[in-house]
Image (cartoon, rainbow, N blue to C red; front, side, top):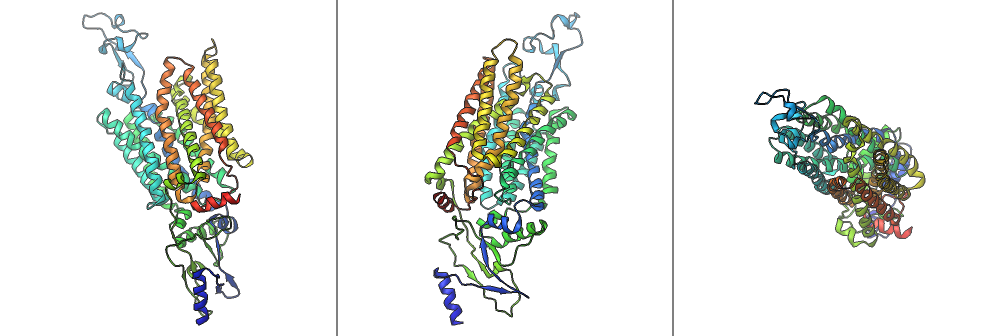
Length: 558
């Protein structure tokens, strides 16, 4: 016993690491502590059947955000109008005071009517015409303002007490509640407030969904898996016209688009696991190992009892220094019952970090500032072009459908090339592609006979490039920052993208003055973002660090 006590004391003092063994029926296994990425690569599998099922179930929430993000295209649209089929008070035909070519603002309100009735949209119900069109933009901006706040709020919550799964549940439940409440709103003011509340919850849906879906994936598969999540967002936009086609009134549309969020909370979320990385940084190693062992079993693999986790705090896989608690050791002699090795030797500790720490680090500060600008530019261009979809000259239902459809090849091509060309090259290329196409389109728009064609091509190619950018910018941002502040970093950067989305409608309005001006602005903004991305480091096949200290040491070693 004296020898064992001395060994334990030496282990606590850091002078030696005692070699403890567990006795099994036929062999002795030595305890080994691995980083999360090493555990996934060696024992669990980087992306097997378990991670695939987890990824699909989690990513279904993206469809909910896609529905809510653009539902206002149909709910706030200006419907068709027609002359009333009756004579005026003097008995003369209404044709003398109502003509289809006239402006409804110049006619007597009794001379015309909305096709389908006043409940077809918010515009027809509350009279958002003839100088009140700006209220439509305010309602759209309110949604993006809510998303701006929601990204930061849920980013902090999911990094702390709620966890990734808890934050996702709260966000989806709030989205369902906000959507159903919007369908019953009595006036325009309440409508704007509820749209802001919906935006707040949707900001949490996308952020929590992305991190929860990608954190259990190994480093070599994380890029492709992360980008594949955006297929679900585009799918939500693609099915939106179907909801709108079969629900002719805007109140019914909000009810219909809220039902998927309710079903997700009830039927899908109970079968989703919490992120093992979040468990690890919270010091809950046992729960993290339970998730990994379950994944390994579903993947047809096996995690040995002599293997446990530690937070990756450097290139050599060293444990975090300065733990608040003395590591707990449990001695098991050869006659004891077999216990899990993580109960024998666990370094149970919590690692934390804040955005203030990011700006105190020269390495992370530069990354954060560049990503803030890039996210802002991306939000401005993507949502700006999306709001111009009605200018393509197609049926509104088909326009929204094709707008989402064109994003699919962008996702596919980006996924195929990301692991070969790297994150930085793909980001620079996608933003420059979108920017150059918009700039060329702004020049062609002034040419006679080419105006409509240029607008269509620029909308398609611009969204193509920005969809590719959005597809990889999430995974790139996640890899640029360690686990302890990853969600907070994503929250801050997505907030900047939200600010870009808020001002995008104002840029689109400039098209009434000069048709080429919006495309010129979008092109310049996209090109600037692509040039800034050159200064970012490449993260392809690099470790996904858990702590700030680990990332700093890893960068020095590289």
